[in-house]
Each structure stands twice: as structure tokens, then as C-alpha cells.
Image (cartoon, rainbow, N blue to C red; front, side):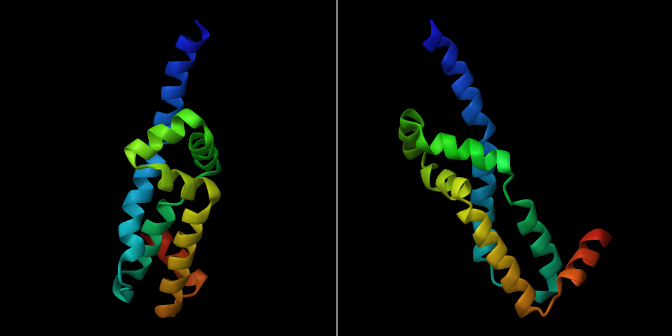
Length: 119
């Protein structure tokens, strides 16, 4: 009986972190994109929106260590994304790309904040 109760809870738990995995997949395109200073501020804003919250990191961490979810994540091809989100490696890549854009386009953090507010 307890197992039947845990299955819907478990499914709900995993479905809640699916959005972080989808954002991770979308962000890969932005991370591989060449730097264009004409749209640097928009690119930085887009990359910032892909960062994960602490809750998403926690949920993906749990989903990447439970034996049953490991199998499911491997089958669905989401294991690498979930692990990168949980460990913070994904956010590190995003921050690195933002720093690359800022240095290549000679932007300062103050310039970036002003532009983000105006948009």
C-alpha cells in the first residue's frame, strides 16, 4: 500500500525538475554560440535566465542518486543534465560564458545591469 502511495509522489517529484533539464538543453545552444557584441546584453540576459535555483539543484541531485531514477534518467537521456545541474557544473559553464562575453565585448557589470533594466 505504501508503495502505491509513493509512486505518484515520486512521479510528481521528478516531473517538477523536468523544466530545469529542458532549460539545460536550451542553454547548450547559447553556450556554443559565437560571441556577437551587438547582442551581448541580450545574450547575457538569456544566459542568466537559464541558471538553476537551489531547489532545482536539490531536486535534480536527489533524482540523480536514487537507484530507480538513475535507470529512468539513463533511459531518457537526462542523467548527464541532472548531474550537471545538481553539482553546479551547469551554472559554472553559464557564468564562464557570461564572463567571456563581458571580456570580449569590454563590458563591465555596471553596463550590463543598466542595459538589463532598460530592456
